[in-house]
Length: 115
Image 1 (cartoon, helix red, strand yellow):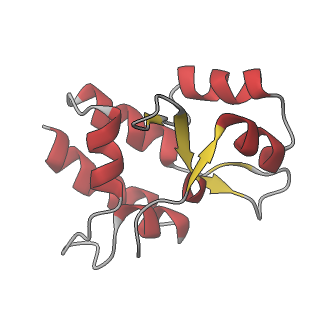
Image 2 (cartoon, one colour):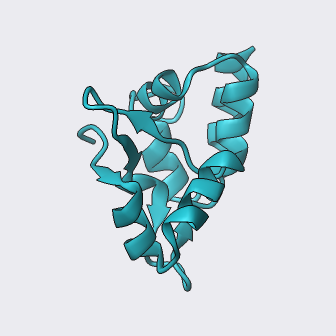
């Protein structure tokens, strides 16, 4: 899988059908993560959204994984790098595994990574 497809907070809000401030609240609540670009703008990886859900939402299982990795001391940038790096145990990237519903497998690998 190529790297993340970065979108702005307003673009994420449009895709989710919510207000910008609600997207920022999802970030504060640890359900999404933003990474600052070289210009200082906050970006969200589009792949962290489940646009097929009704209503569209943050990817199932992402929040707990973000919490686990963050509690292990990973920065948002490191978390994103980890999510997009192929893992031998998962036989795919963690973000692909989350998108295919393999939440427990991702958490098992994340736990080993974080601690």
